Image 1: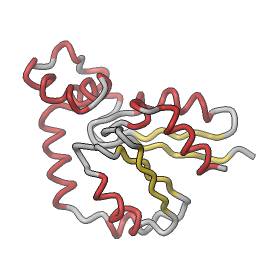
Image 2: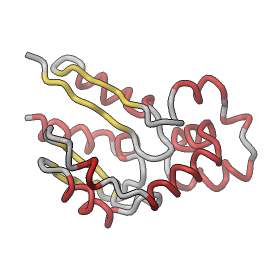
Image 3: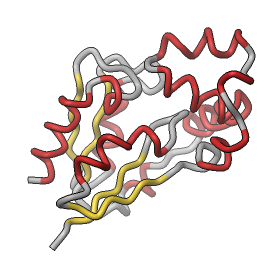
Image 4: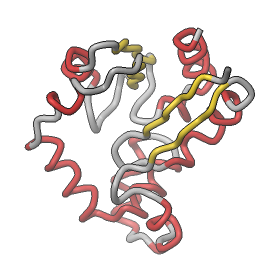
Length: 158
């Protein structure tokens, strides 16, 4: 029986981040990709990085790979700001506690958007959570360190 796997991107991301991971998992797992509100396909179709103001691209590019810049540009500064503010205001611990599936939280050790120091708060809230930090990775460890990410995920899925 194929084990279902749900992959959720980080802030300013989208499901294309998971293409390599999805392909690697498809033979043994049913893979579900989730786009967080405001970051999904509707934004990808409506906005190209080339249309983004150069100042926005310059601020985002140092955060990681080009895919992060493209997704952030597609989402737009309003969505990024709204989402960031909501993350700081809203306590999601009660909602996370409802997750009953084994959960792997993979974080870039150098994530500038949501620091690795925040991982314990998320992991403590999810009953069956495990944290893995990827050294030298930033906000998109599945793109920045795909082999390390794949190794961790394979070990987790057993």
